[in-house]
Image (cartoon, rainbow, N blue to C red; front, side, top):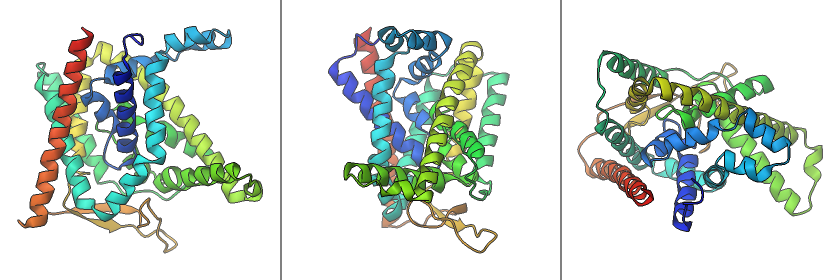
Length: 339
């Protein structure tokens, strides 16, 4: 699997990792959709579920090359490298655009999700009573999640570990936004903003031979929170992949129908024309989000007026659809070349 990858394939795999990382950080958008549309979702799940007893046995016995090949290491390594780079770069740029050009960013994502629904549904020929029920259940869950209120921030390490498990759902379940779930759990800012900033500041300090952060209790707490969150994410990623691999193998079409439902339901979260309603916490304060605003309670959605801004937003929706179609074309072309 790995030996057939050309340099071009590897570069594109890193780019896909960048896209997954950026999508995972945006509330309402799922990195799993990127994997699904770009044509590497099943390989992603398959590679993750190879992290099992056999893999650990190879690792602990010092058979590193065998371990690397067994878990499809080149594929996972390049993909996760792109995600990490995205976490500290592309996602920051995305935060800026969401803050200053919110309507157009949401329009682009709305179009991409519409394109994703078309992509997944076009070759799905197994509609029956069971898959239709699964579709409806997926839609109900997706829409229902978008109307829930967020909880208060909680830095208890057991809860943070659980947040890590839940947050990776967006990578393994297309249409299920892990970052939006973190907002509902009250820890989006803590885990995706404050703790990451603490790590960035710490790396900067170390590079400048400044170790004063060792006496900063809050910084150390944030680093501990980030480490716990990361462990939870890794645990959740491997666990979900094993479960999904089993489900896809035994209930493939019901699972795909549910995923389509999730994605359709997520359209409510990324509907471009909405006003943000803010939540006041019990002590009268507000929680900041990544753009410096207040954490959302929910959205008040509305139908836009026909004006220049609306026409530009519609153009971005069309662009989003075209991006997905381009990814589909590239995925099909890549598969034909490998065959």
